[in-house]
Length: 181
Image 1: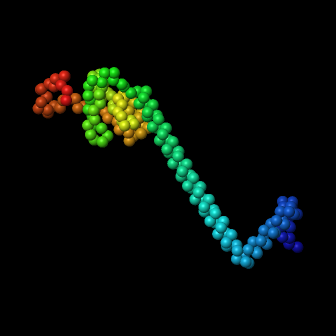
Image 2 (image 1 turned 180 degrees about the vertical axis):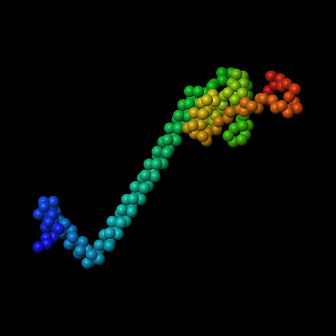
């Protein structure tokens, strides 16, 4: 004689009477819902609730990603500020005006002393924009800054501009050292 699956599970001890009766009630309820046509309404509500939950989870993930990205940008900006603050070269006597092309393609003046002016002209120092002001920093520091943010404005004078061209017709004429433009 063939026993039902439920009877077999009860006999083997995998299910107790309480769980068997609960499963039987659930089966009858599902059959009743199918007969009355209310099963579709319940399933649609479950589907809509599941979709809403998934959409909310996706929005939450996107917001978390944006927050992490903003926190990362703030951390990089803080690292750059610290690099500039610890390596900035401050001129005690800013009596010489150094001019360079700024980020907006306009000529910008920067007042420095003669030693800094010479090093800027030779390309040994760089000028970078930070918080709407300009700071003079050593060239090796610029590489560390560019590793963190490649879009930041950094001006380094072309050291090759001081070398004379062989075909220059004015090569024989020396420019006086005290000439300021």
